Figure (cartoon, rainbow, N blue to C red):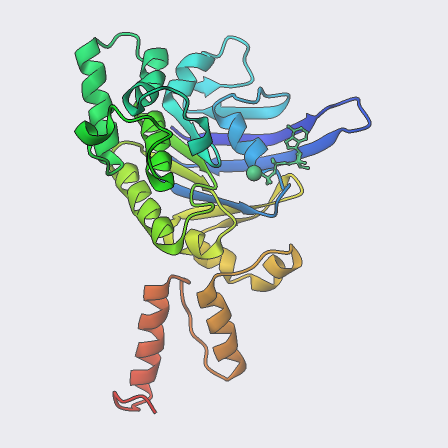
Amino acid sequence: MQIVAKNLTYTYNPKSPFASHALQGVDLTIEEGEFFGIIGHTGSGKSTFVQHLNALIRLTGGSLTVGDYDLSQKKCKFIELRGKVGMVFQYPEYQLFADTVEKDVAFGLKNFRKDLTEEERTAAVREALETVGLDFEAIRGKSPFEISGGQKRRVAIAGVIVTKPEVLILDEPAAGLDPLGKQELMELLHRIHGGWCKTVVIVSHDMDEIAENCTRAAVFSEGRVAMEGTPAEIFARSEELFALGLDVPLTAHCAMLLKERGIDVQTNFTCADFADKVLALWKAKGEGTHAQ
Ligand SMILES: Nc1ncnc2c1ncn2[C@@H]1O[C@H](COP(=O)(O)OP(=O)(O)O)[C@@H](O)[C@H]1O
Ligand SMILES: [Mg+2]
């Protein structure tokens, strides 16, 4: 399902002295099959935007279509849409509530897939938990409150992918995880992207995460899309990012330092590509294979 937003606007507490113009004309198209990144400063409208995509926030200005669903229409089938566009909130582990992991994961199915038998439901819960890397038999009967933080986050993701949404949206999915936890989470999202969900959209303020994982990204600033493109296109515009108060990936910093020293490395800003390009330059200079 292609996502097309045109001139999307949204104001919290309109007509009050506390009005907050969260979205001020977002134009953005996300193609089916992308692993899309949304970057931006705190308060730039990222969460408000993604919550529009499964109608958690109803459209008040502009237009938005997700596949065949036109969210500007009152007759839009919002419940059906929510089964196809899954949303994992920031710190989703705080939203676990049932007395067992199995019941928690099954909750979404009961809402969106009323057609399933008890057995089909159990099979779907098993598949979702195994996909996020958990042992179904070992964890199904546990309380969500007695498992580790990393497991809780996986259970929360299982509870969203269990309905097999076509689009999976995650708001700051790696927030608060250590480097290994972040890496494992990204590997999990790539597994899901290949199989369960055609399109994955992540909100992140970690530029390395965007550079390493996304096919394309958009930079939000003051409720609008300030920049859009592949990570390589975006991170080549470091001056503009700094002007927006944003950072660049570590590889971009290294490329800038090398440039100041007269070495121009054309990289796509992933670590592997950066290492390859530096190595190629080094070899081309005929300096042998020993570090000086
Ligand atoms: N529930 C809310 N009530 C009032 N204002 C809000 C609410 N949620 C967000 N805002 C405001 O809307 C703007 C955009 O917020 P948000 O979409 O959460 O940005 P981001 O996710 O990029 O940090 C900010 O100014 C924020 O203070
Ligand atoms: Mg946010």
